[in-house]
Image (tube, rainbow, N blue to C red; front, side):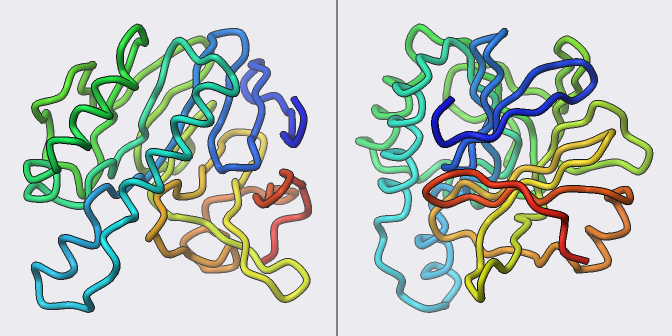
Length: 217
């Protein structure tokens, strides 16, 4: 796929997209992690900075574009799709309608995250984790996990002095970057990530195209 980086994990052929989404062609499945919808509202509600409240719309615009680009029939959201319970319950009516339209005609799975409130008033399956083919989808990576696809850490790496969100890939696991517009990131050399990823791991950086390089440690 143009702009994507193809690889195999646990015998499955996958594509890391430049947007930060993962595409599984055989299953016609798009996977995204850490949307954190409603983050600006939560920050303001808790007395933080008044960020422009447009990140949910930007995130959904990019998701809708990816869904159309690959003609996805299935979607997996790898947890922290909402920034907290109040953000999930207080989504504007227009945002809820937008999510319902995106779900229409697609198998949609919400994986529980540490920010997520559990099942919310949206369609789709609500799961702690999910197994498909040789892969297991969950929010937080587990030591020794095999064929594991996860999120949570919001990995990033520096390329030519510029911070880039990135996938982290080794023989056993893949960690997705955060997809949400206002999400921060954790450097790949942080002990939490360098301790998880095996020697020889790659960082697949996002941007105009997805490019692989040795994972910065």
